[in-house]
Image 1 (cartoon, rainbow, N blue to C red):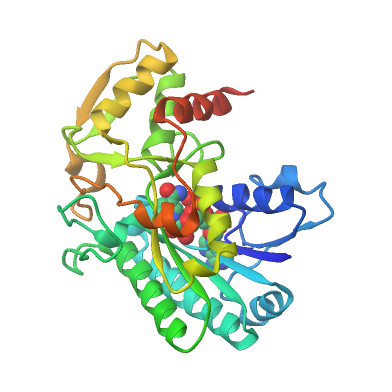
Image 2: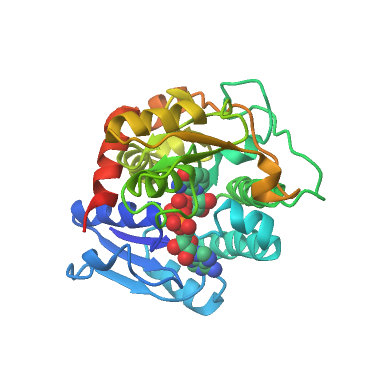
Length: 317
Ligand SMILES: NC(=O)c1ccc[n+]([C@@H]2O[C@H](COP(=O)([O-])OP(=O)(O)OC[C@H]3O[C@@H](n4cnc5c(N)ncnc54)[C@H](O)[C@@H]3O)[C@@H](O)[C@H]2O)c1
């Protein structure tokens, strides 16, 4: 099979590319970013990267025509972008998704779209099943642009599904693992690891009571591969996550315990970090019945094991 992965030079895409190559398939990555995270795959003759934007219609169309299956992961991701460059977030995440779906529809190719737990916004009724409400704040608060962009992408997916496109929407819940961001940048796990490895205090934003569930990348990738293969997933939105809920304060404490570090915790008020463009979500837990039933996948990696493996990877020279 020929697999196209937009945004495939990123964290999740690099692991997905590896998984399809391991199964003996051809993989092309379309991503303007450097190939740091996929460099190790270049020795495989079945692998290639095209360093271009998903907004380049001509190139995108040619690659979709070549492929049998399209994974659309390309997106502007990360809180710093939601509050720093909402224009770019909206343009790439909405227009890019429309371009991919249009090309896939034209060529009759199946698409797996990467959405996010962020679409549920600040809904407090956990666990979120896939038909739960989206509860978002004002459009004057930039942080909602990402959730809005992904929800618009989902609407496009379902609109195309009505016209006959085979499409699956996956909503990932905090996926982490080796190659996640650079240390100190991006998401909470890499920020904490950077601080831990230098023996500095871990900076918990707010009072640390906000909870998340973390999904180890191998589990997320198994679900993503199955979404590409299983016809019963088509036309569905499916949460991809673990039910192991943990507060950010406890996550920091657990990471200190796992590494045997002497770091301590310091609590930083949210306004000091994100000015007024951000608003944190109190709890976020997925209902995972659809992931089990439609994809046949469970998040099996415990948080301790996943964190150990991730920290080990970041410690490497
Ligand atoms: N990792 C998670 O926890 C998580 C959670 C929810 C949703 N997601 C979604 O999964 C996908 C992958 O996320 P990730 O964690 O690997 O993030 P990532 O930032 O590592 O990967 C995104 C990739 O998209 C690429 N990209 C940006 N603009 C592009 C463009 N115009 N054309 C082509 N590629 C472009 C980036 O260069 C990057 O390599 C994203 O769509 C993201 O929204 C991830």
